[in-house]
Length: 383
Image (cartoon, rainbow, N blue to C red; front, side, top):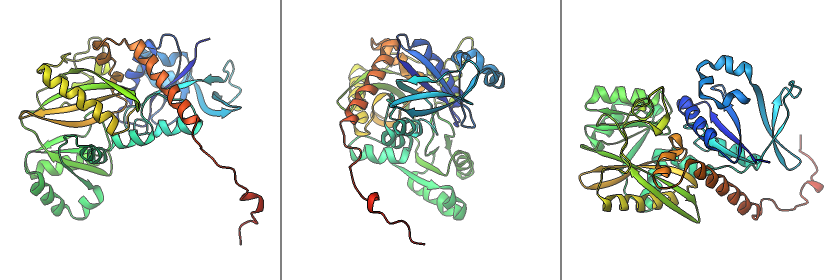
């Protein structure tokens, strides 16, 4: 019998649609496993059903939801079960889940939310744990840890929307004095280039902050690199060992890669996620530069405690290399980089699931609770 793998996707995120695309790619490639789609709506409800494994179904989501079954996941008798809601839905039966493959990009998923959900259930899951996922999502926190590990990063400053509105002139002046123009403003905890903009003057800076704060309470500012080139590299492994893929030069408009550049361009017949577009694999950089990037990618992977497969984005400018950010659930799971390195998507997914089971075995050997008699002599709460 094929093991049942819960594929989580969708969610309350601005990257909801991209998550669906990546999940459909993964479900089609799971091969020796039985994929159990767990679609999370933008309201946070979970649905499952046979129709949730086809990307065409999501062209009419209200219709798709009517054809599916609301689901809840619980642990019972040592097993993790996907339960239909209500329990007596005709033809729907509980499904035993053996592991999970989170494909939830962005907030409320990639930030460690789904990892925490799986850990509470003791359901093995592929990818980074709660801490690593949360740190990598937070651009300021990840830069701090990477700098402490000796990795090359651009300095940044974090600002809150509360401070911006309370003392706007002081915040604008602080950014101007620390970074000058042009300056890049980003939401502190977001991905897929959403909410990122360049400011060349004070009015543009105000607009950039407005945009970034529309996605979250914190934003960062950092120096804008001139004549910058982006290069990406994926890493697969765990705390015991990891290896880097070939590097890629992602397509774009010559400046900051937008959401559209990453997901909506160059895809015949509709968007195909990060696997589409005008990318060059291997990247058009010297071999020695590529090797240096691969070494930095593995070092970054371990410095941030990553597991599973991640994509690390670099910036090259004036013969300097900077680690830009780490994507713990990259678009398309970065399978195209693994395939270019000789690892098929099917085998990559099998390795991710194997790593998740290995981590669960490792954790099962740890002490999670200690026996005490505190409650046996507890006299109750005083009124």
